Length: 195
Image (cartoon, rainbow, N blue to C red):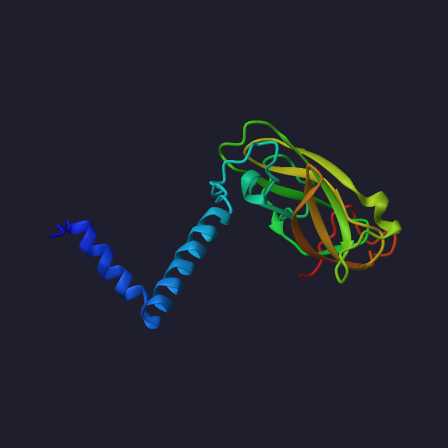
């Protein structure tokens, strides 16, 4: 008499099943699938950590909203020379060579003053023509709501974009139409322009 334990019976049954061609094919396909799955898991790239937006301050590019609430060129309602507390009426049409004010409000948590460069670019291509290089201007903007004097409009008439730069990065663009100025003797420094 031969005594067979539970493992022996299982082995006998498996040997009998493996001899069947259909069962053998199913087992081979299943084994290949398991091996391919293990290989795929081992070769998968390590996931990169998600960007939580906490880049170092030196790496962040300046943005308009990080420094300013509003910033626009304009004139005083009575045509007088703008002063630090003067209210301005927003303008986009100017006379060639005119001097206008800048009305600026910084964000409340701005800690230090900001140096802003203003350039005049062509409206269609947004390039700075050689004749406009002399019209670059720099303003030191302090915290709060203020009017700054005076933004000098180019002497060349045309359609422009007033570009605002901080730390060499363009932050905003304002459309500007510059018309021929009045003939000599026809007005002072601040001549109203129809809007």
